Length: 541
Image 1 (cartoon, rainbow, N blue to C red):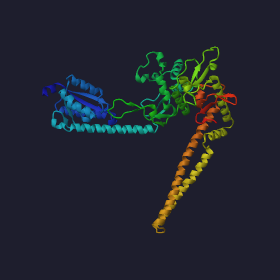
Image 2 (spheres, rainbow, N blue to C red):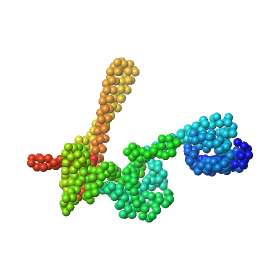
Image 3 (cartoon, one colour):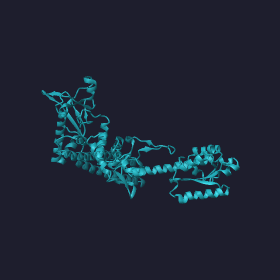
Image 4 (cartoon, rainbow, N blue to C red):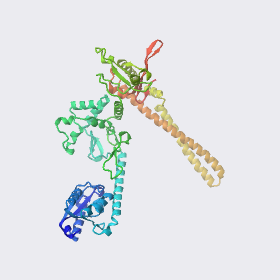
């Protein structure tokens, strides 16, 4: 490397500051780096200097604008020397930092100086320690990365929102960036989307309704942040199925949230790995729900069923879509419309039969055929019967349902709680007896053999009491959860007292599944059983 070449080329003074280095800004840390580098350059006789500054960029990767410009200038032969305050300012990735220092710079006849670390590539004896310093810098970066990741995870597990931008329908609380509040401008759109999903609308049909009502998509509200996303005025209302699905699947709208949707195993990993929705951890969040939790859960059931059952192209609206099953083979029942008598109403021409029978014939399963109108009459009548009971005497209805479920009611749960209280008192009393027994042993009142015998009996009694406490505790917890679910069901089915016609929304709210048996002859009469499994409570016997 000749002195003439160094004198004629630029001396690059490289400065870098990341957010991880502290919130001190350009006025302090960058300014400090500039001062140190200017002073060093002047003392070493470098006068043709130029600053390359990356403020707010991590040292774990080299995709930084000023650094990339410096590398381009080196490749163009404009730079002869590079100065940085220390090795960590150049970068914290020891492999890539070493590659630049030991390969790239020498190949381009560039001298590198890290002022505070005493590194100068013109002196080969000083370079032996450089790789170890780079490794230490990367270890520091890894430690910072772990601390940041751990801190974010803890706050997310506490229900605090850690995202950059709030989900559609919500906005960040001006008083607390980790708290969400309802956005009254966009939340009505979210509610409308869920109301359609509850009616059994698929995502494509929801898209059409949103367009028809001229309800803007999320991108419309983000133009000021992300530039012009909308090429025409009409494109503001052109939703896609993926956007609607993301909204319907996000627990943020029921007052919960995912702890994380992506993962990054290493700080060197450029992208973030996607975590499947079913594998994500959901926690209770601190913000108010836009959608009632039960409605959100119902929509998830509907979406799960819609992915397995394709809609019919017959023109008949199948409100039982995804709900109807064969009790013998367990497969879903398919709808078919008989077009031989087109003058008859669709409701009378439509019927359901077993999927297995449709595919394999009688060797696979029996037909289980039922006319759509008969099914609707049977289900409507059953709902009206239970709705009437719930309206007439809600408490009795709840007790009867819980008896049918084989669980205890709230009164019995309270009695069990009282029993558990006595057991806990018994355990506490046994502790006191054990302490007294030990005092007697210490004072020589009883022998060690007597102590072992009596203390063994106390421990056995305590163990049995603790086992009973655990068993009763689980029973109480289950009973109260069942009671809450049955009470919720009673309220929902009571609302159906006056209905005259079934709808997809009503069925999806109340019913888990419906089984249709094969027809059989009982006392000379053809009988077909329709068993309805209601949500939370199962089938009434």
